[in-house]
Image (cartoon, rainbow, N blue to C red; front, side, top):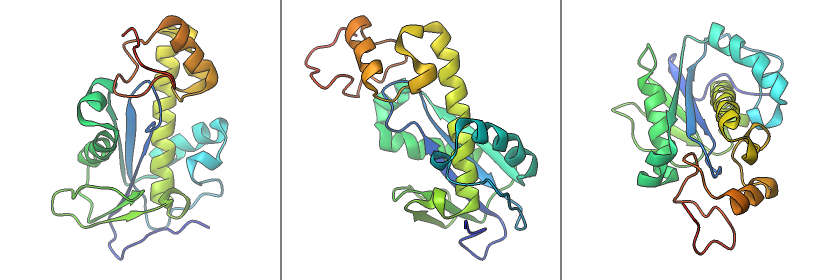
Length: 199
């Protein structure tokens, strides 16, 4: 059973990211403020849901949220600032995109940088504990998956529509065979035996 809120503030925003462990594509974050009375039978941590369920929940979250926003930090910026900083930056930018300034921020995970003067709390496995973080995890994941489907059309040899940029055996075999693309994160170890990779 997911909790509606962590704090006593009425405008509490949940934020989460998707794509941290991927070899290609952006890290995507979402921020969601839900109404206090919001509930939905299926809403859960995005990792516990099928792709079909996530896609069904996305418009329900977007229609019911008091405010929501999604942000992308692309692979070039990830390479510049590192994946942890990129994940936090993506969450900050998602909060920037809200139409309402939240009073409190709850964050999935254990790392965050202070956002303006707004108090926050990091929550390990927050996406399986709080509704707004679960909702943010679903938006981040579905928007990122849509993006990976789109770039899959451009580079079908890497099977991004299936692996979404994660380091599957199939994905790594494609990197071995065809090299890295413009969408790959150059700061990541793309191959286990990586010594010198044609970039």
